[in-house]
Image (tube, rainbow, N blue to C red; front, top):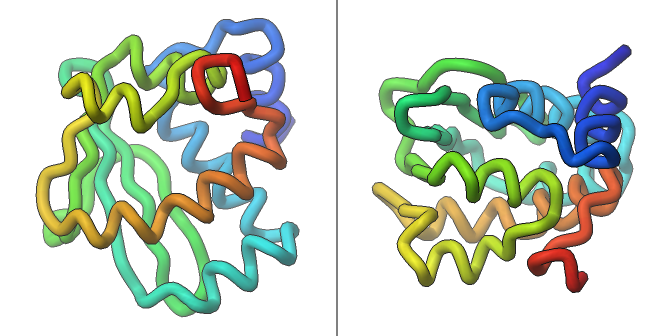
Length: 141
């Protein structure tokens, strides 16, 4: 079972554990390998790397280079942006129960570094979320 199937199963059963966030990043990579809309989006994005941190739980990274998305567990030393996500918010983001913009406004998602890098992620997450069946917006989307 690939990462996409595992994440879809966790979403359906609402059993996603934030420790599994690197698996979610791997699912993003799998989607990027076959979704033409995402391939086109990635081809238009300058090379970047972004760290994700769920403090006390897990760290993950996402790298876009040459139109390819890769990522997994760990950190990239010179990433221009780190997105710090509260544990419960990370769970809700993946299951679709938490609206990211609201979580950011509440201080449960923090951007450390170049905020412009975060803007590059929006279309990527929209495509991946659609592919995985994640309804964003606190379950109302």
